[in-house]
Length: 285
Image (cartoon, rainbow, N blue to C red; front, side, top):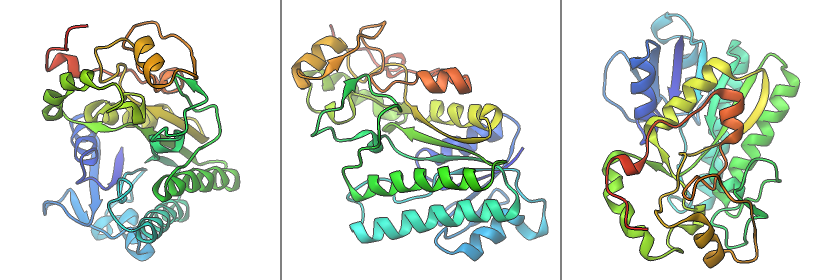
């Protein structure tokens, strides 16, 4: 497919671009920064005209067939709340609206695990968490992600041919990050803010391609994380220490993810292929 990736120069985006290209797709990176070349086009997503022009075909080339939207201020606290709200919500509207106007019907985009209630200062309703309970945004950044999901729901109602997959990506990691993981066991609370979850950027890219190939029409939200936690301590022990009053539904394995990826597995065929344990030795249990 001919695929546009907004934010293709970011931590997750560059891996998504590389993996899609490696699997035979024609990919253009739409970002404010990037390496000059045929696979990159500088675009400010807060300008609807630029987005429409880019998706319609660079230099009058063929328009794109699918869209992966990752461009955003990527976390709370990196800009003022007003700037985060304006940039991310307007940018996502522009990207979605340009796709609608151009007849691009396959969209995969980055929502956020924060919509689940992170940093869980208010405990989750149950563990592992999943997509079944209402959104619990606890920051302006997360509020925008919730509003983007709501916007996607309505666009799919207006345009039934649309397929929009909202990926609630966990904390993105690369192999270079894994050397720090064994030290996490010393303090169960240090990484409890997202239930000790993470997503290897390569598995994030794998999930994107699964959705591009298999996502049905309409809107669906998916938690996207790796199959294990960042800890070598068992889940039951961690939950009892940090969230003693929360219903714990035991996982099959002692270190299975507590950000449930069952829906992505079932509907998209997503199966993580990587683990931090393949790169460093886990701390003794």
